[in-house]
Length: 352
Image (cartoon, rainbow, N blue to C red; front, side, top):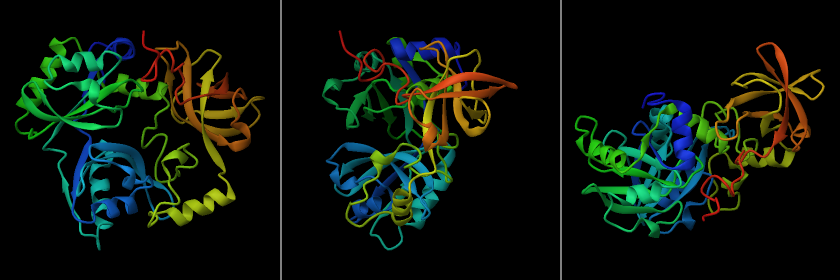
């Protein structure tokens, strides 16, 4: 996937206002199956896999024993003894090795299918309408975070009502489509373009997920951060049967209280925040944190940032400053999940 096709801003706005498509075949995909697959996955992720019914999925994280985040991922239950897991491209080898290492002692089989299944994200308020044009089955029956087997462009596929833009949409998995023979993926891609979808690149993917307040592994979360700091408490089920890797360490952090917490920042002065820029208190006298993701919001028309600050500086409307190219630029702490009004934009938007 290139950084852009036509340009980051028009691609970004196409997804917010209509529909865009992304070639996300670089993502990691693993099939886990066996008599103890549910027990195994519950051990390696923090969320409760046992609550899933067939063809349902959930967002979760994997932790190290010290509660650092190995990666975030979505796991889908395709049958009682089979799960399909999707995780970050940069962590493909690391994640599969982590799963293999921690599968010892469980009756489970793991297979990396990343290079055997193509993946195309269809995102935006017109995603369903556009994908329906080349799909035989009724897409309106697929609930959010549910998976379905579909016939798309005449091909056997799966699609999940998920995505990484904050918008409604689907992640399409083109089955039996190896890297050496991408013809099936091209048929689906070209069909979507003919139906009106705008090809989008990495630049729009990043600006869209940032507006939605979604974490990027390697920027906003990594092995030095834990889910309580990263505002991911909702994916941690401390009381689930059997526990999970990192539970004891995370429980200690919970009891002691986090030292820093993730926040959203709206830039009210002139300037565009970027990763690693310093965050200072409202008086500009002391550095209190660092931007982990930042940029100009094409939807909102001003700079936004995600970063970490001490808890006492995390209340909404708290004034802060960001050091941008040697200048201190005014900003304030704001709601960041998402930054925009979700009654106007995103999958929760009010439908006319």
